[in-house]
Image (cartoon, rainbow, N blue to C red):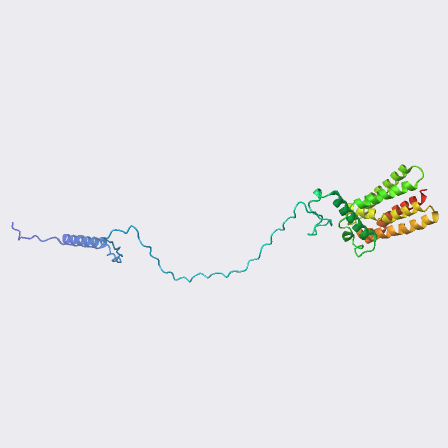
Length: 282
């Protein structure tokens, strides 16, 4: 049998072969992926063949930003210097420092005579503000802003000594009674004003009541020199009115106007008791 001889296929076999060929062709077309689009060209980095410079010169890139504005200089306020303290040897003879804040800070090292003069000048100044007419009598805070207790103590002791010198017997007992009456009375009257709601300092009130005894001191001194009942009554009446007039504005303005009588009545009662004690001493 030669190669030129062919055997015809069965029609069913031919159809099977055609179906296989179609499957092979379809599988081949489905497995092929679509072509990738070409990538853009990459920038190439130039490579220099020259060796690097060990000391390169810096290059600056010019900036497009505007130059900074220079602020204008403003005049600065001068800082005041602290005052130079006075030398240790210099003291204030007037009793009040030049700055107006009270006595000089070195009063502990000053002579005794300077201290006595300063205290006496303060007593005289407060006595003028309390007993004699002045524009500050209606305001207790301004009248005795620099209050003290040396003046009231001196006036109480002087009145007790004057009454004891006027007595013929039991001089020491007279002095003790007068001193206790005046000292305890001033404390009780001050507490009475504070309990009534008065706006006043405790020791400032004691100072005011003590300075208001100055007219009664003068009356007691005159009555000791003039042993006459009529003269004693007149002098005590005048000095009692003077003391009451001196104490009235301070005590009346320190409390509520509706309680003014409750604050003034005990003050007047104490001064009247001192006046009867001056007349009764013989």
